[in-house]
Amino acid sequence: MVAGNSPEQVAIYGGGGFGREVAWLISSCNVPETKYEITCFIEDKKELIGKRLNGYPVLSFSEAVRKYPETGIVLGVGNPHSRLGIVDKVLHANLQVRTIIHPGVQLSPWVEIGNGTVICPGSVLTTNITLGNYVQINLNCTIGHDAILKDFATLAPGVHISGSVHVGRLVYIGTGATIINGTQDNPIEIGDGAVIGAGACVTKSVENGVTVVGIPARPIKGTGT
Image (cartoon, rainbow, N blue to C red; front, side, top):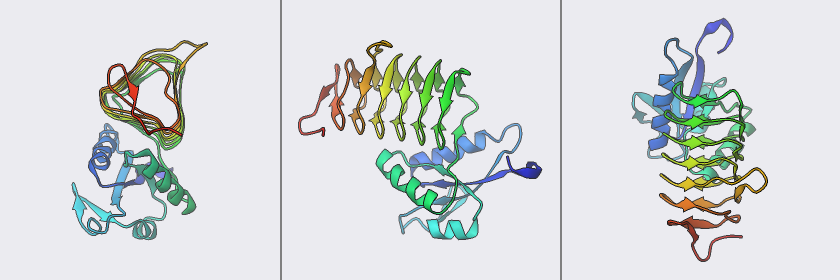
């Protein structure tokens, strides 16, 4: 919170489905006291600019910066590569990306959380976990001991990551996917830019840029670096 106990102004970058869920998440953080004031949604889609979404105005990035020069930015875009471009734009404008964690999230004191991370309700993070910057953890996810999620890693709803799993940068893990546990000496490694399909069960490491689907998860031909 800012000086004088005034609510902190935040704008949500992204007016799609996840962005609107983030607005609700932020509102849930305002109980029992108001910590945040949502100023607007920010959108790059011209057809949305000038409208209202769930009661909040939709502005272009330049208009939002002009109107709310001190606002923090909360990332409401699920695609990790799109989020990367947004972060570059936000930091270039000398604005700050905020971390938002729903009060219903369960996590131990031994979880390190990077800047600009969003963690949605129902999620459980156990112990000795490291989250990088700009990570997104959607509804009802679980992350086990000694897991590492690098910058821009993205978990869709209902993802379960067991212990000793290392998730690379810009990885996207689809709804309901499961990654079995590795060990401290031999963790399961999900390479940078990999995609885990919805409902997949990952039983072994995945190389950079590879898309895997199914049970057990197998690569789709033509993916990878």
